[in-house]
Length: 125
Image (cartoon, rainbow, N blue to C red; front, side, top):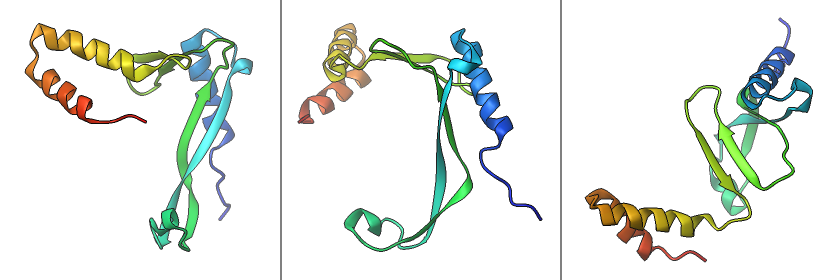
């Protein structure tokens, strides 16, 4: 039996093609980052405390395809889910979140109010 390589060339090309279609850019402009899943049959989570683990990657994982940009705007889209998220890496995001949340509270959404009160108790360093 021949060992399979993950990701395959076809999987990488499919990811690049999808991002090229979504962004309106050429496939050659698309870059890819892969992150294989890992299993840890011995010592799971003790590595966070400097312990010894027996970990290994498997032939599944996450493929992130993207088009580099020269500005600070980030647009996240998924090939599997609808919608998108936009943000700028040069702005403080939490303050904008609180501003929007305050506006929703003024409209009278009780659940949003509870969330806002919870956020006010959280200290961001």
